[in-house]
Image (cartoon, rainbow, N blue to C red; front, side, top):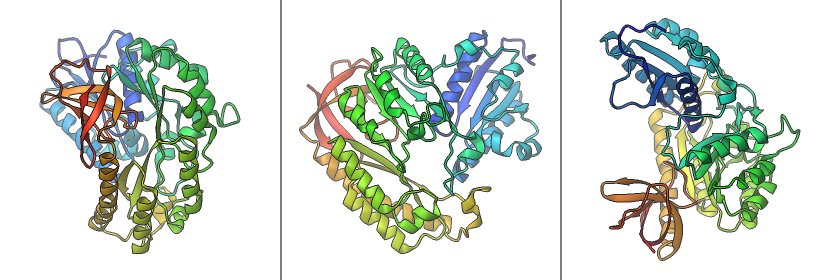
Length: 435
């Protein structure tokens, strides 16, 4: 690939959206690097001449951020600061034809599954033996590990299957091999991710095989923490919990998006589960793994949501006392079945409902954190910032959950595990001292 500049090409990858996108960017970076092409993530030095924007197309806010990022890079190209701008990811997959017309300055557009085609643009060969060899964009002590691609669910609000296709599991051998490579690079914690973690294996093993995968992963030497993200509640495989309870390096942590709790909302969302089944499932999970941290995400303002539905959700949070909760406002997405429903609530009303719900959870989080004062927890040190160390317990995932603030005169190596006694607790964070 020719460049307008005389210097060697250097590629900057900008990743937007979820951790699954991040893994895609890391795989792309690994392939470029193996082909002898200089590549960096989120380059602040601005000494690159080529940009690849890996976009998100999940909801309106994410799409807007992706478009604005593309336009920013196109402007840099117009000013002679860049030679090439390429776009990939979910937004490109979903709206490529429209974007071709609206932003013609982009040099090429690629979908979510077109890595070999992207590499050809760089005169680089896709090397199948390097699948799983990634140029990590995270600190070296943790990484995300994608165990499958796509989703077979038909949730009425979700456009992911339109952009990622149907569910395709990696084999246990492939996932374990990638985990071993990550550990050899210094990774101590992996976060298992997928569009739907608990569907794993049904396509290739004809059964839900997440528990089998976890047994093999937990045997990988040097892998200290394994964390589970994005477990679908309907037909949840309870045998996963037995493995979690038995294996010390599987975190007592489960990220299980519920989206709502009132039966009429769950039905309209096509979630294939009822409120009673959800409450029974939560009780069953806690019974099998006492002390487990359960994280969920919710949607506020779905079409047809009433004030009673909002009150129902608040009451559920008060009764279930989940450990971690995130919330989205509903985004009206073309080609989803919910798009046929009337989206009558204003953005302001959706935000107000989300805030109202989160205020309930904020109080619960504060009370739960207060109970931790005086307790000692094993934490992993993530970074040093403003003269203090920021760490996490096994009950906290990266960026979305609590942090433990440590004031220590003694240096704490980043990525090390230390024991910390909690001395202060706030709504979403803790403070502690090394013991």
